[in-house]
Image (cartoon, rainbow, N blue to C red; front, side, top):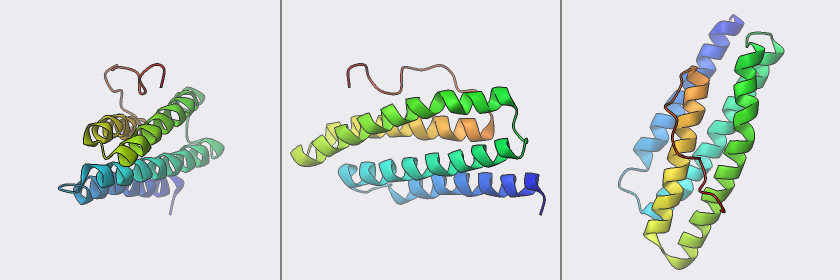
Length: 133
């Protein structure tokens, strides 16, 4: 199997994981669904990182493309931490609206990971994590 075919296979697995998680959380308690989405987003991020790192080492990704990933990593980490903290407080207080705020951050993160892996530009939106969180 060629490197390009392996990369395509990994990409298909990442996209399939995104779709499976979205379907699995439909109709579930918002606090539980957000917790599942947080875990899935973290897993997708790690999988995408392995894909980017492997392709970069194999010289299959250009420096500018890899730079996009490098810039995204700290943004993801900060926003994922904010979403986790927001979700944790929502679980403690049984606050469904807090879970929804955390889920909105997670959804944006997952869209950004997918866009990076697919090599598409998303329209510029608000920052991943609200300031001061």
